[in-house]
Length: 75
Image (cartoon, rainbow, N blue to C red; front, side, top):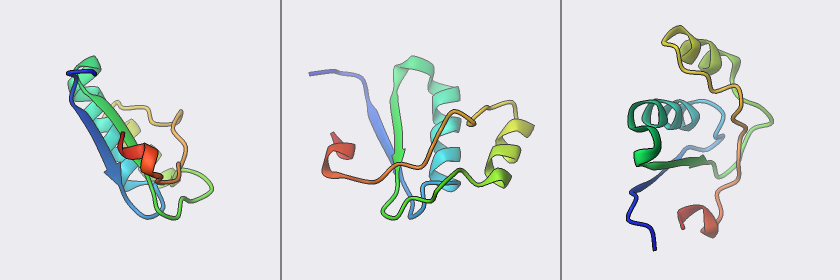
């Protein structure tokens, strides 16, 4: 069992808010925290406005994609 903290950010579409939160925490915590995000009804792609906003602060989330929230997401 890992002693590394794990954070799961959840929003409906997993295409903006939760992806931004994941990007911020990953940027700030580095490898010290396992960071994931998921959504109950994921969209088809990231919201371009979220990608642009994160780019303005130097955080690249273009490699992310919306993911479905499953019981395994919380593990």
